[in-house]
Structures are given as C-alpha cells and as structure tokens.
Image (cartoon, rainbow, N blue to C red; front, side, top):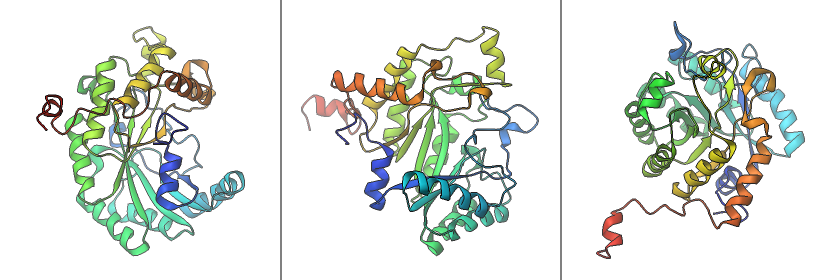
Length: 317
C-alpha cells in the first residue's frame, strides 16, 4: 500500500512492475461493438464510444503512437509506454485484421505492454492464442480490459449491456488461463444500484484476483438513451457525497493488491449533459483522499471475507 494515499495507485503499480515511469498511448481502431448492431448499444454509451482522448481511427496505428508519444514524452518525461487499444470493442474484428493491428503496436519502439479493451462476449481462445503468440514473439506484456460496470445483473439488463454477470465471469476465467493481467471497468453510481451492489462488486473482483480497476463516475453523454431518461426525469443520480462514500466503501472492501487506475470519469463538456456534479475530477479525488485519511479509512480495511472467514472469526483456524 502507498501510505501517501489511502489506496494503491496504478502509477505505483507500474513503477513496481517496470522500474520506471510508464504511460499509456491511446489507439483508436476502425471498429464498433456487437451491442450497437441494429440498436443503440449500452444506455450510457455515446455514438463515438469513449475514445475522447484518442486520435481519429483513420490514422494508422503507428501514426497514432508516434504522434501521441511525442506529446506524452515531452509532458511527463516517460520513455516506456503501453499501447492502449481503448475505444469500443477491439476484438470485434476478423482475427487476422485484429492481429495485424496488435502486431503493429508490438513492433513500435519502447512499447512494454499492450492493453486491449473489449467485452465479455468478444473473448475467445482463438483471439487469446493470437495475443499469446505476440506476447512470446515480441516479449510484450498483455492486459485485457473488460467492462463489467456492476455485478447487479438487473442493472446490467436495464442498461442494455448485452451480457450478464455470468458471461463476464466466464470471460475472466478464460483470460486467466493465458496468464494475462485483467483490468476491470466499474460504474458505482448506476441508476438502480445501491451500497450492497458496490460492496458485492468489490468482493467479486477481489475473489477473482483482478490486477487493476477503473472506477468511472457515471456521466450522461448527449444523444444516448440514458440522456433521454435523465432529461425526462425518469432516473435520478446519487449526490456527489453519496458517490464519494460509495468509492470509499468500495476501496475498503477491495483487496489491497488491486491497483486503482481511475476513480472518476472524464468527458468533454460539449459532449455531456452531466459529469462529476460540475466538479473537476482531481478536486473530487483530493476530497475523497482527504476524507479517507482523516477518518482512518484505506483500501483493504474490510478485506476479511474470503478464505473461510467464519472459521477464522470463531477462532477455529
């Protein structure tokens, strides 16, 4: 645990892993999502997906990496990088096409890791075999980023995720057979979810041995089903204070070795009807950190529920 923060930050996780500062270079592929075929997809997903910080997908992978590297290297003085295939569902491509994009990134100088964002229903052994071969050939680590959002399967259906908890767990177990690391995306303030869902989400991630987590505060992107429901008053969002408490509880129940990559969402103001209660994400982060430190709260404080907890509590083991 980093005692300067009440949680284990992703930056320290990468420093421990690679011995130096590492930054992600986002890559945007000309790809969509199976959940958007003939429908609008997840209720919260904008037409452009989530690649707000990435270049346009018509640029070659090499061009995107080259241009983004220049600005990141100048600003953060990093010299090793993760090629982050970020937007939409990156494995929703013909196998040979997908492999070509990944290999192009693996050949790029100073790429130590490739992160592939995808969905549970777009994970298969064939694609993982291909990634494993690239991992061997180029000695480039592989991380699979899987959207979960919540363990509440009722909420998953309401949000039109196109999968339930079972499919997500199956995808995790499949990926783990290949020894790839897994990053999970969660949204802790979806309409319909409460604190029990937050706690159970932390417990599920901890029990499955996930390496990293991105917690996204729910934003309302324009021209989405969720935006229609929000503007018509059909859904209510929790307060800033409630979200900060959910985050704190989530971290307390989360295994201490799971790295925290993100705690709040970011979206250009012009694209959103609501985001972060009108606050800067870094101000919210500081408020969360200050509150947790002042009250002696930290990641893993309540991580005592696995490995025969009742037997340990009874003093039998």
